[in-house]
Image 1 (tube, rainbow, N blue to C red):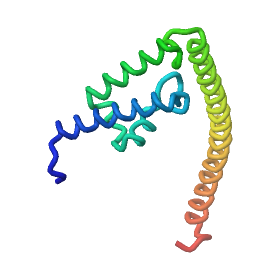
Image 2: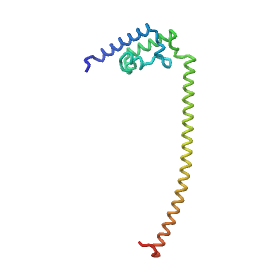
Image 3: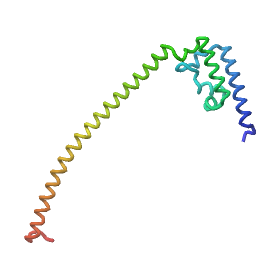
Length: 151
């Protein structure tokens, strides 16, 4: 064990995060940490030296991060949550997903059609083979009954 309690570790994580915020303010390099209209949580965690789960699970860090993002939105560094640009990006993403789903459905439908055709072919072949087997069994029984085949 590390000898440090969970609360103490949580407080230390908040202090490290606050220090990271101060460093970023001095450097004014927020753009390096913005992904999809918000701050990149995994990159923040890596730079702060704690696990990415801390950003999601530590209530103080989560609250402070939300406050920071709101502040950056007010300053114009981050785009507001409900903007035409974000709506367009979401719509574009939805269109892309729909396109991928359409292509996937078309590919799967083509595969189903191919398999159905193969099933029809195999059923026809099976019927022919069953007829051949029936005919063969009839000949074999006839030959055995007439004594022409060794039993």
